[in-house]
Amino acid sequence: MELKDAIRKRRSIRAYKSDPIPREVLTDIFERALRAPSAMNVQPWEITVVSGRALDEIRKGNLEMLRGGKAPASDFGHSKPYEGIYRERQKALGIGLYNLLGIERDNQKKRMEWTMKGFRSFDAPASIILSADESLDTRFAASDIGGLIQTICLLALDHGLGTCINGQGIMFPEVVRKVTGLPESKKMFISIAIGYPDWDHPANKLETERESMENVITWVGFG
Image (cartoon, rainbow, N blue to C red; front, side, top):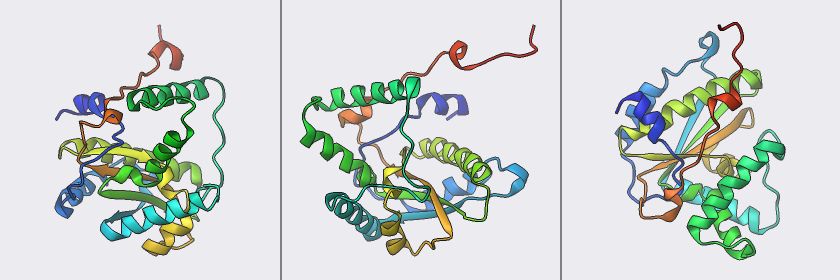
């Protein structure tokens, strides 16, 4: 698949088949993805790939925390709420998704059930957790990790895999650390749900819109 086609085709996949991903497939993705750009070649990323019983344990632990009333928070604390146009875009995505799922605005039970699916990594057969050492500058580490994330997501398409960049999967860091052995010194930035898409699931029909170039680009010094 050509790069320009992969960029246009990629979307967030929120429902997966149960088929496991062969390790050699993931290895091929990582061998190529690790060529992602890195400022000064620092390569800050550390990758933990979780599947099988270990991923089930993380799912179970996340749900137990939620049901116990603990507020989700990443290694970097509670997320700052979106405001203005950013909040509007977030809401538009949520409305589109819930419409496809047939979940009405006042159906709090169904909305919570869907929220919990995110904390289960959307029931994908594998989850990729991206971390960096606490000694690193967070800005530069996040920039490099962002490049790696996109590279992984695009390469996955070559193998018929789908992905969803998933913050909820690491919102209870103590659960992830208990299962994976990841030390406190390694700060988790994000996780990626990955697997073979269930194209019959309505959530995977969602197509998001992007702002036009005129709204997001300022040209300086061009004729």
